[in-house]
Structure formats: structure tokens, C-alpha cells
Amino acid sequence: MEMKIPKQAEQILRRLTEHGYEAYVVGGCVRDALLGRNPEDWDITTSATPWQVKELFRRTIDTGIAHGTVTVMMDNTGYEVTTYRVDGDYKDGRHPDQVSFTGNLKEDLLRRDFTINAMAYNPDTGLVDEFGGQNDLEEQIIRCVGDPMERLREDALRILRAIRFSAQLGFDIEDATVEAMKCLAPNLQKISAERIRVELDKTICAPYPFRLQQAYQCGVLKEVLPEFHEMMEMPQNHPRHNDTVGLHCLKAVENIHIILDAYGETDRKRLSSYSWCMLLHDVGKLWCRTTDERGIDHFYGHPKESAASAKTILRRLKFDNDTVHLVTELVYWHDYRFPDTPQGMRRAMNKIGPDLVPMLFRVELADLYAQSGCGREESIHSLMKAKALWREIIDRNECVTVKDLAVNGRDLIAAGIPAGKQMGELLSHLLSIVITEPEKNCRETLIKEALEYRKETC
Image 1 (cartoon, rainbow, N blue to C red):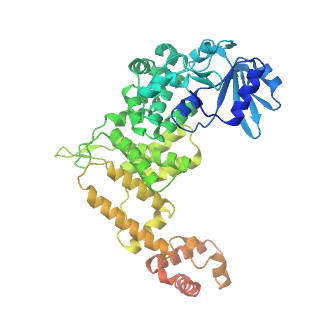
Image 2: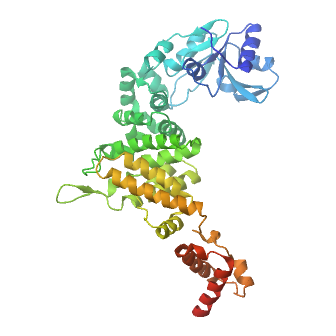
Image 3: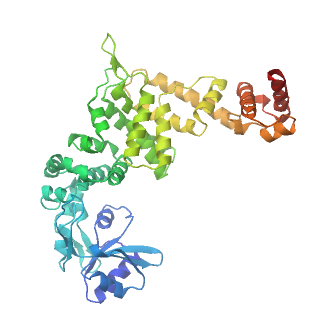
């Protein structure tokens, strides 16, 4: 078979082979190329030692030379070139204590996690597939290389990687690998929060985020996201819900992906924020559940509790402050019922924040479509009516915040009003007038209103 690889990667392979070394592109890039996807990175494995690699290329970076990796710079692009190696014991459940170089490609491929990631390719020799990776791609199976207990015991992060690849590719995880995941899930306690965050984030941002359910079934969520494990088990005995809290939230994550795709939203960081919002928007229900005399569950006050819990979880996973703030705000307001009048909508935009409101329309729609059919169409109709009001306000460029006022503090001072702490109160008064009567947002009118208000209050 012939595989198209970047010209620069091929140049690296050629130079290595011309000097008597073996060299192949390897791992995820081979997998993605076989699937018809565009690989993000092209990694290279070789029989040459790091020092031999450095002798052959003018620009190199010692990115991991102790583990056999040198980055070869071709123009402004870096290619990781790693010597065939055999890993020692993984006493910490994450990293090999030592590595030894080998001249045998098969020994190098044997240390890799899954068969679909353990293939190598060279334009001259073709595909090297010692463990049936190509067949597993065709069968859409994720399977460990060799003994799954051994592979996952070496590096517990591979448990989350299996789930992540399942979510990215839509593949099933092979039974023996699943059993090993169940057995070794407690080893995830050895993994750093940052590593766990990366894998969970990639999973829920993937094309098949519902595959996170496998993490619950394997006992993985209990170790890395215990709140969501409980959500997967909490029923919602209510006409608007057919699912547990967790299943409902997973459906909401799927829905937000569909909605963002419909809007052409491609920003990866924004997708992450939306996905975490939907995953955690009902986490507060764990602490707000009450049941009435009819046996119907209620979750009064859950948005506030959910926001607080989401902040705790995101901080624990070491998310950046901007993401924590945005997700927390969206979760806090996710159940807000928008007013059905222009004045009410202007007040809502001021209260919530004009930038957050259009995001909330998407969040609430994803939430509604994840519920049962009971009352859903009416709720969607109300939400769309609110969105139409919001659009009219935006199109008319109406004032909803102090910064949108036709005057500022300097204008009022120039009109004879002294500076001081009461200036903020005065601007808030003017804003309340404009929100009620948007046509009054002109400089002359507001200065007159300000002078009259100061006269009445002094």
C-alpha cells in the first residue's frame, strides 16, 4: 500500500535510510492516514540513536533525549524522531523508570498502547503491522497491544485514552481491554489532574461524546469525576425527564455539538466551554433533590448549586481561570426563563451580561432537546420568542449597559455635576431610564435627566 506523507517527513526518512538506518513514520499519524484523516503530527521512529540523528540534521532540539527523542526542525516545522526503544518497569504507573534502545522495530511497537497506534510506515518497505492494527481499524475496535492488563498497568492514563479514542473514532473497546480497565481503574489515582483533564476534555469535545458512558460502566468516573458517577445513577422522577441526571447531561453535550455545528462554531476552546457546561449543568441536583407526595422529584435551587460544584470540579482539574469563569456563569444561568417583553429582555441582558445571553440560548436549547417530550415544544417556542426579542434589540443597537449610554462620567462633569462616588449611582439611574425608554438614550436628554435627578436628591 502507498501512503501520502508530508514532503519534509519523507526527507527525514530518506536521509536516515541513506545513512544505513531504518526509519518509519509511526503511531497516530499512520492510524489517521489509514482512516483518511489529516494527522496533526508526524512522528518518526528509527534505529539511529539520538546522537546519530543529531549528526545528520542541522537543526535539532533535545526535547526528550533521555528517552530517545530529538525534534528535527524542517523550516519552521518540528518532527519528533525517536530511537527504537524498550521501556523498563513503570513503578509509578505512568512513566518507565528507564528505557533502553533497541535495533528491533517490533520490540518498539510492542511497547505501544493500542494496536491501531502500533503501526509504522516507510515509502520503500510499506506498512509494518505486527499486531493487527489495520484489521482493528476496519473492524472499528480498540484493543491493547499484547496483554491488556500489562499495558494498562504500565500506564493508567491509557485507560482514559481508550475511552477518548472511542469517542473520537466511534470505535468499540475490545472485551479483554474493557475488563482490564475495570480492574485497574483505581490506578488512575496516580495520574495528575492535568493529564486527566486533557483526556476528559478531548473525550467530551470528540464527535461521539456519549462514549463517556463507558467510563461510568468501567468504574473509571468514580476515580476521575466522582460527581458525574453519582449523576449517572441519580434518577429524575419527573414528567420532563426520562433519564438519570448523568444520561440527560450526556445527551445535552451531544446536542450542543449539533447546535454549534449548525452555527458554524469551530473555535476549539469555545467548544470545550460549552461541552463542560452541558456536562455539569445539573451536577447540583445531587444536593437539591426533593420528592413530593405524588412521587415527583424536584430540584429547587440546582442552578446555583451546580455552578458552585462546577467551579470546584474545574478547579480540581486545573482548568484556566477564563474557562472556569465562563462555564460557571453559563451553568448558573442555564435554567433562566427569559422575559417576553422588550423591556424585560433589555433588563435580562443587563443582568446576565450581553455577551452571555446568545450563548445561553444555545445552552438552553441543548438542555431542552435532552429532556422528554413533555412540555418541550412550548418551552422551545418561548425560548425562540425570547431570542427574536434579543435580536431586535441588537439590531436596533439599544442600550443595555452603562457603557452603551450616550453619556459618560466626563460628560456629566462637564455639565456641572461634581465628580464623586455618587456618579456611579447617577449613571445607574440613567441606565434604568434608558432600559425602560430606549429612545431617551441621547446626550442632551440624559444630561437633562441627570441634572434633574441631582436636584431632587441633593
